[in-house]
Amino acid sequence: QVQLVESGGGLVQAGGSLRLSCAASGRTFSIYTMGWFRQAPGKEREFVAAINWSGETKYYADSVKGRFTISRDNTKNTLYLQMNSLKPEDTAVYYCNSVGRYGSSWSSTNAFGSWGQGTQVTVSS
View 1 (cartoon, rainbow, N blue to C red):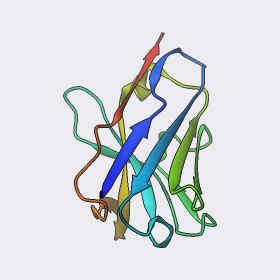
View 2: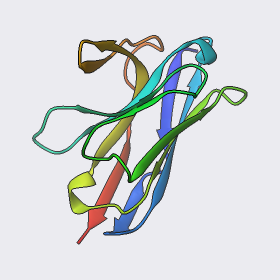
View 3: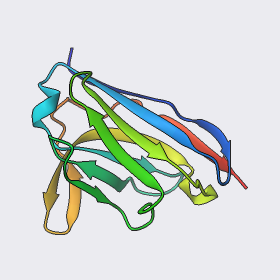
């Protein structure tokens, strides 16, 4: 079955940390550049971070640079997002997907079918 399943979200106080996971199945995970996106209530989905197939190259949105770290384990077909120094403005549903870069923008490429269900991250002040 081709799918992405995100997990690891929760409620945390400002300054706290969370680690998100994304389990991929149904495709050869290791060949894809993967990324994280998030969508806050009333806002469009936005790019957060991306990592190339080998894990050697990483990209971050300015809003999370220095606080979030993206990583992957190709032996487990799993993508991770370590989130430190969380802020209330990080509150959103977080999604993973395969990604491609178009100029200066990142977009999903849906190699694993549609978006997963996402995982809710809520940061209280």
